[in-house]
Length: 244
Image: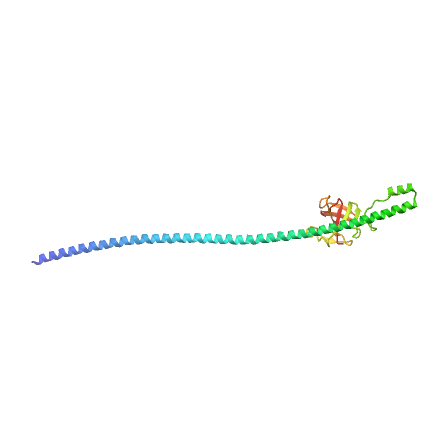
């Protein structure tokens, strides 16, 4: 075989080898390219999954925080409601106690009034009997007609603790004592006890109760000018608040 033929054969073999190698390399390149595309897609999907999971986690955390906040608010509202209920119970108890004291004071005042009235009637009867013994039948009749009506007064000319009842400028007068009925619910500016034992306000008005006069009304009593701060008297006159 000549050298030329050998060179041709070697060239053909080399060419075939190069073609085969090039085909293999091209195939490898395509395989790597496809793997890269697949990896890139997987990576993108993984990243999207992570972002979705992060968003979901953030949503759950937000819901959890809102739930915790709602729970805290509910606990605070519960405590506030308990305090309001407790305060209302205390207020009811205080009002019931005050009402009980007032009823007791009213009963005592009525008892004193009955005693004073009986005493006044007895004094009037004695007066009439004395007049009858010294005058004729006609003058006795005239004396009885002109004899003063019982005014439940004492020798002091005004309501007293011992008499309990007095017929004053505004009609029948009784009293109730802050020693029995503290009257914490009464709004009396400058509340104080005067020298005569009456409870007065900052302007010097005697504190009184009336069922006929509106609160804030001013009227005269046997002990001075009074202002209405309370009700629940039980008669048409006034109830004077005292420290007797």
